[in-house]
Image (cartoon, rainbow, N blue to C red; front, side, top):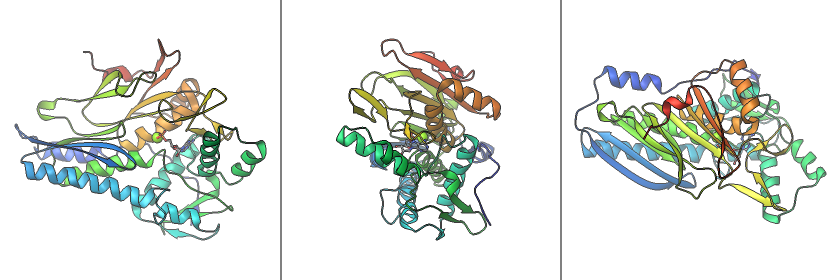
Length: 346
Ligand code: AMP
Ligand code: MG
């Protein structure tokens, strides 16, 4: 049966894997490390795996890349024959059978949409296109253009059938864009793949969003730099230490359009049709990549005040957030109570 509302669960899909590794005693004293940097999902990736021997570590890195590429091939709206590409070309009312991965990602996205009253909405692609064009032509869209795009957007117009694993749009011109969530999910699948390939620990960084696979040898945390929102790429605002889970950052530091001297974020508020105004830079630490990625986008739309209220009202656990707001010289910082425990002291 089709449905578009479901009980929302904040998942920690990676926990079981880590518990399994610990129980199996897979933390040898002297692991071998392999690191490889490459382009994936249109951005730079850096993958590190620790394993008992070099061959296993290299195989784990390769397995992680395979998982990232598979998610891209299935879910990128830029890949014409991806499942999302095909769904976007199907007329309304026609159902498309999906892989378990794409179905899972879409169903999680619909959970977030329901939980946020549409602040997170993967049907936002028509609006994303309008604002991309606005950025190119340096001209704000007209009210008519925005109204027409908004008629093609709405998470409640995307139907999913959990039994058959199919999706169906219900309005003409609807298009899905998993850009706010799929990278995080890809990180999770890559971490699982790494573990299955024999890595005892590892780190996967795709464009600054990072997932770790357990601590480094000796229970050492991984150190992950958080980009300074108002300084050149590579300058860190702080360093986060993680043994498990993921950290993702959303912001318009490097992805925005400038029209008439004003910056417009690539993150939209689908409730208004306009770019998000509230938070130029949001960093989220969560138990897994999917949650870190989705929440970073959501909390960019909502900003610190509405964001905190939602997290509290929904009883969301294991999501720690840092919002950084102008002025550039001395950013205003808002943090959830648990964020500081992850910040490196040196
Ligand atoms: P991120 O960089 O993870 O915050 O994701 C931003 C990308 O998600 C954008 O480039 C769009 O493709 C898509 N997106 C923008 N606004 C939203 C939104 N409100 N809900 C879901 N996806 C969005
Ligand atoms: Mg995101």
